[in-house]
Image (tube, rainbow, N blue to C red; front, top):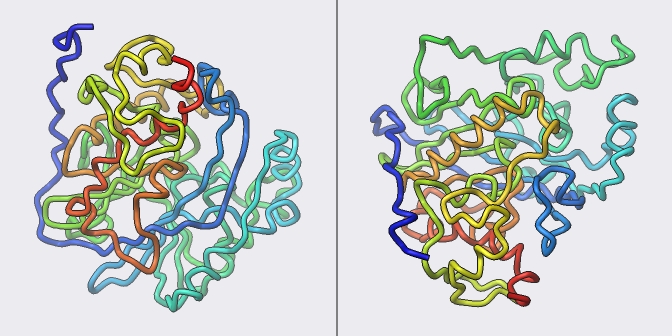
Length: 359
């Protein structure tokens, strides 16, 4: 297949405002796990990868003068008994294997992070595998949610017996709904909120998957960033490869994945690719899974634009492929670029190892 057929498209300008202000970032493995059929989230079925085994990551963001925030909390270990009945029954009916060993508050305490240091908990979106249990944090910790949350979920359960959000998680604390004015700041295709007011951390309105879905963009050095993608994509194969970064002629996974040939040719991968295209993602979101499929597709395409920028490490909440690459709390990850983590973009291909043994 001729190389020129996959010449990269021009990388979009994200228009990230310049700033010397940075935050320290730590990635937290929340001990959450979901195992489910891939068709529960993704389309089409790739026969050699019928199952997804998903972690759930959270992020500790520390501003030098304005304290700490958490971006997402993972699954609460008591989810099966603690969630409102309507939601609990709905989740159990899916038949997924769901577990969590620890609350995020426990994980922080074990790593000597005082809960009183957490000024805000930011939910990327109000789904149970991201919301954890904010009630474990002090009353001074604000709960930050995206547009439309209050209208959709208040007053909450049990005041509303059909509610899917327990009101205890915001009772007695400030509940902040972020506003993203249509005429305000934009970064990439997303409306943006400069959370600390100094360019060190932005919240990005990335709608479609759920009510008020947001991503986080943390400035790790003056010219490097981590994009906390939430569920704007559930698998890296939803935004990779892309027109901006097509599959290369040869791919070497580092560290290697058992069963995956190293190096692996592009031609071999194209035999597995549903469209046989080196410039289009392997997956799309399952039709009807999102609140608004069209908006969700646009947000996922927005991730591909960030992924094309070498200054940005895109890290979606359930990216199992990066588990063996990145460092977790208590280590900070601001030096991700120097450590070469950006070179791990193709590790998700290890999910197709079984198929690679057959081609």
